Image (cartoon, rainbow, N blue to C red; front, side):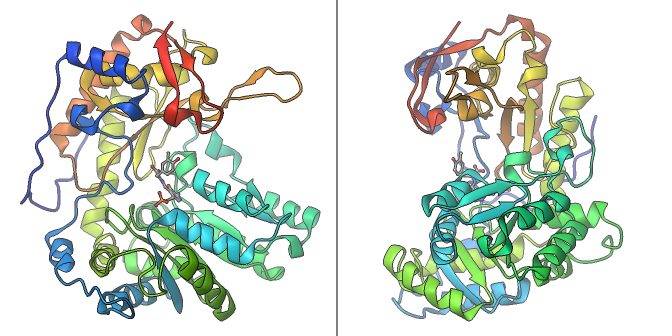
Length: 458
Ligand code: P61
């Protein structure tokens, strides 16, 4: 049996959860059109839809809520966040935002012009959408190993530095107002980026005067991988590694709903005064005054405290350990997953899990529906439902390379027993996999299909 690091906390408040019967789940899922997004949270037993905004806050964070200073301008909680950002990330300027995509919107509207290129290891969907919204091209330059679910490369989130050089050569530095690195790489399985890669990327960018911004959503989890896997960092503290990472960056966007351990919040930080001044103008237009940016004072306080808590090494050891524990339990029984597991989620490889179901019959969606029917578990499909598209010329369907089902673990929410339950359900499903059927659409919306599509079993 794989080893599990015990939870470095004890439980003070509980929220009841309830497992419905199989017959109830059949009716619930059918009424939801077999789309898990339409299932009510109360009808889900273990909710692994996302790790975003689903963390359990600590007693210190809850106490911090009572310290909220709800003054419109320059409340004291603004300084708690400012101090945390300056101590951890080292950036001189920041604006709070209500969540990560708002920080992205302000950043790209400030620095990207129509026709510009923004390279990244892999842009997250909100990041890509915000770049495209201002007419920019979002370019993914992930190393080849990052797309191979069986590769054991220790840093599968790395950017391909040669491809970055080629892009600069091809389009010219004047067309690249900034480059980004997503830590960890969510769209690529939550895989980490090494400090050596950050360094190498920054080197290329510096030669051409291009700033580097980091999508810092899961930077603390990335730090833990650097500490474990990269030579020279074993004895460094997470804070020391954080400072080294961000010393190479000119700024960052952050969804506090991940590694700041809050249910809402985010920020955009940078050194450059000019960018800061322009960002402040858009922030006031879209989010709120420059010291609260769409958040209450209490939310700012919870985020400041959460930023520090996520750098606690015992917390990170347990957090990344939970993901590894679930992954190891599945691997032990031959269940195909993306290897090695990343920092926030285990990704089932639906193509290898259900080889008898062709991609046209949506194996990932079938697995998501089956996980719910079998065990009341909510996961999310990251495969054909999310990404398949019709070729403009031929009208033929183009299916994505990877057909994955993400099991994202909320932070500090579920215990080892919950993970064992999840593993048992999946192992049982895997042993009966040839009984699972493919799916087809009964309603196929034109955009962001996964959120509102309806399905039935073939
Ligand atoms: C998630 F299906 N992630 O993983 P915001 N960068 C990165 C993220 O992972 C991220 C954001 C920026 C989510 C929530 C989510 O279509 C979807 O605070 C690496 O959510 O604005 C969010 O941060 C954006 C899931 C978002 C989705 C959009 O579950």
